[in-house]
Length: 478
Ligand code: P5A
Ligand code: ZN
Image 1: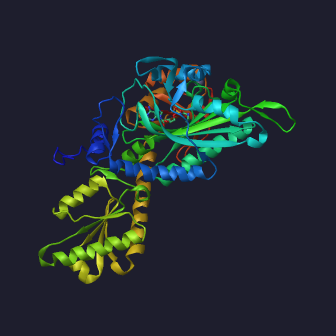
Image 2: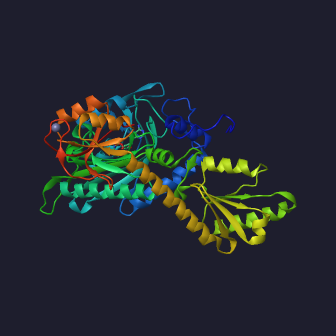
Image 3: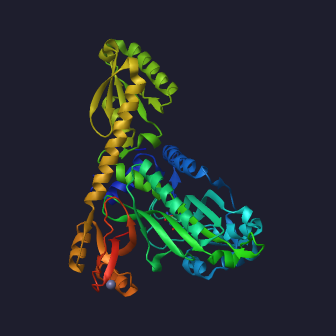
């Protein structure tokens, strides 16, 4: 990549910063000639792999991974009326095989309910078959008409991590919803992404769901990004697709279902929340390179320093750290800039004097320098990496706290939004009041039943009608 194409815009110009950092740090190439689709560079792909492995680990505890086809026959896709209404404008259709028109049009999955559930109808026979918990990580296609944006609003979501579960009762499905929320929070918490979990208003729930719980995070510009959703599907789909089981009394019952998903918006959140004016800042846990070793080879001890740096790098790699030695023939300063831009959390500098002293200079991407002893370098490095994660968590939490503000009148609400914040208000839950809020602010009612350490759940007067209302988040959403 061309490093001389001007400087990275400052982070407070968030939109410019975001678009720029993706190609500068070699996460995504946005020049692919199909709107809403982008190319993962190897470095970005390595990052994504580490992030998704954590989600796999969380799901693998009691889910099974499977794989369903990309193509969905029209008649299956059209079965659930709410679901069709929600997605009909977003579906890509395959209509031809070569030059031959197909007898049955095939949808490219925008999500996989209608691919998976006809098969669940075949698989579920008795209560002993339940629960089923399956996930897949696949690409999905949505013909998005709003402004597309890399990792945020895609027409090809390249890594849709969707789970689909089947249960005997509504309550068991609800318990699964709760479990999925806990798991998603654990996923994001482990990545130092603060979350706001709330129940979406009815008009904004997933097409075909009883209710939707959404996970949002507040981006650097104060807009919210939905980074995951969990849906209780009730028995809507099981009735449509005839997913029935025989209960202990030998009677046929419709099953209850849930589904939940996370896309590459999780990557967008990581890049956006943790990055700074110098570029990316990767969480050590998911950094493709955790430690960059830079030899400082001034003067005649060149060979000596390189050899020592090599043995340091090998030792760290053996200890399980993801490390790289930068022996390129460029100035140390240029190397620092290069790896800072690319988000490597820890840099180890090693020069002749360090070799003599048996030390290494450790520079944290989050700021600050420490001298580590070569003799116990593994524990020293582990300790510094933990400090880096802590600093990242503190910074992200501070950001989120500072971007939340209560408002008890519509004017106060507008003022809060204009400051680039997410508002915490009271809303009675009536559609008319919800519509009034959205019309007057141009913002969205994100949800009620808010779960966040920063938001209290005490009821109060609806900011429109004054009746008793629940705590509700209002924000400008991506
Ligand atoms: C849950 C998984 C579903 O599709 N079916 C299976 C359910 N839910 S959803 O809310 O429609 O999508 C899940 C999450 O995917 C993200 N997302 C997107 N990310 C990038 N580009 C898009 N065009 C896009 N559309 C949805 C959101 O984070 C959403 O919560
Ligand atoms: Zn009201």
